[in-house]
Length: 417
Image (cartoon, rainbow, N blue to C red; front, top):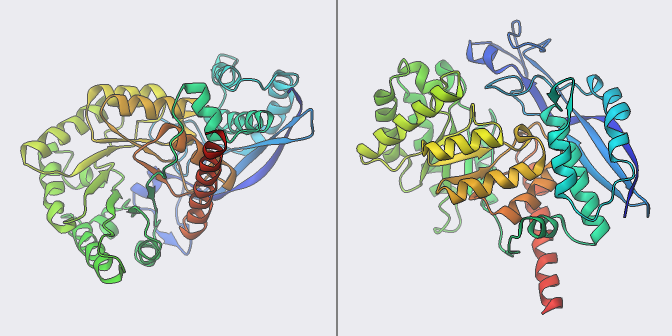
């Protein structure tokens, strides 16, 4: 089965692009927007509409493989590719990328995906968002050509077993960190709430007291709303480096503070993402390693999750090799071609580090569904509910795609037994 045409159409993503650095510097809310001037190159406002490009790969039998190019909410931050604006790339895709794909055979996924990952124009790789969307469409088209699920294609290509079991889901609240938690509890999400603790004054507290209070509220709220006493979700909270700001990047003081939160969270396991942001990969690895070792010396079971400066497959490998954290976030749009997401998950698991297949609220329904298949094949410890910040919509998209696929995989297994 060959590719006969490729179409590119602009679209919206499910959230917005935010200038993370401007927000960290204290930009004030103005309704849904932020007041002030952006500081990250490419931004015309601190918050601006998220964009995507849909890729449609048309097969010779008329079927269409679909993928969406999308970038993370905090584009241009933490070593990531710059702000992704659809109109900047549409002519380029049509002129240079479409001719490479037309006529290609879809009997294998990995060779074409690797070609997209390695493509260079004027000495630069394609933007991560482009690699992400193009390879989603290739995977979907390949699955259609072979009459398989995308999960089965990945398992075949990587020599992985087909496991008919769900992946734990992680819900994100955005700034709606109270009402969204109620929704998560009612729908029994496995991990919650992300929390978006990205401001010292309003969310962490100048002594960390506001976060401690919030964690105690989380524990009490789960206990009061759950209908099943066995429901004991992990607490996973992203701090965007704010404790480092409060404690002047003193590793020991940050570790002491994080250890103190363990009692507030008990009996829930506590994962802390982004406790510090040191501005480079090397310094981040060193700081997270110091935090992890100090927490263990204090007898704390709080787990550190790497996020900032852990963007590419090579970054994930470097963080895993350094054994500087308990978990790495594999932020799907940041890795580019989707086969590298699978490779990152497998590398982390082999290295004894938990894998969190994340992403961003700023993706689309298409990229979220493809991500489900990557996770079902590679088996990370948790998978982000996405896209959007409303939780319910992302939960429906991700959980329903997972359950539909598990049903198909179970039926296929029974048929072939």
